[in-house]
Length: 343
Ligand SMILES: Cc1ncc(COP(=O)(O)O)c(C=O)c1O
Image 1 (cartoon, rainbow, N blue to C red):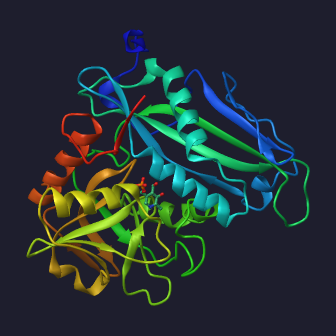
Image 2: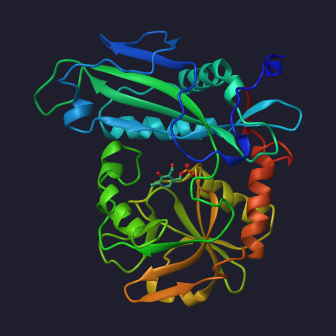
């Protein structure tokens, strides 16, 4: 099997979450109403027209998933069909051509296989982050969708997204909105993220990892973090996570909902999490592909700082969920059927 390829020389135990140029990326072009077959290339520069809609009108969407190396050396993906489907939803929202689930997964597998030497060894907690994206390109100027598109997938080894991995981190509630109530919050489009840089920077300057956004209509309920969904465990052991049309439907969040209910036999609720009712919760966390599960130590809301379980220790339910989720992702625990796809 190809896993025998010599790994590149990296400090695998200290990977952060930053760009590393790997050897190959997949790229496919849409022209005259159809995708070409796509190919791998060594060129990490994208050459596009100055009139590309992605540059001016934000006609761009992306995905994020990971490849994991198991104890036996296999390489596996976690629920890539869900990312394929979410990318289709993003494309439909921005009037871009969709990529079939089959083409999406094939592109992901090609990019992962071609960069196998970059997949962190089992036991380091690192993984290969996979970034599929689509951009509107070509010679355009009017405010309307492009006629040509690029779909590409690149990859890089990563460690923890929030410094420290499974150690509690603090967040601050932002006064800005991430997305409008019936805007584009539920899809993974570029515009949602560009506008989050300023609130993120303000949070960082005050020593918080990121901000938490409230619902745009009433500013009374937690929506999500800038790059992850939110969950909490009530004092009587219910898994609660916000429901809203303006948050990104996190694949990790839905996986945790399933695991909490069916593997840990917990009651689960997708509902309202009021910012003035944080005392109801014993533990809280941020979850996502990059964040995995990041325990939330405390949340700053206006002048109050609310600590959940502890600012330094991880709560017991959060720990159980983390072990279960990462156990499945790294192949140590048998998960639900169809969650794992071998490369
Ligand atoms: C805004 C936002 N929320 C939530 C998530 C987590 O989603 P997932 O679990 O599918 O990675 C992400 C990352 O993709 C995100 O960017």
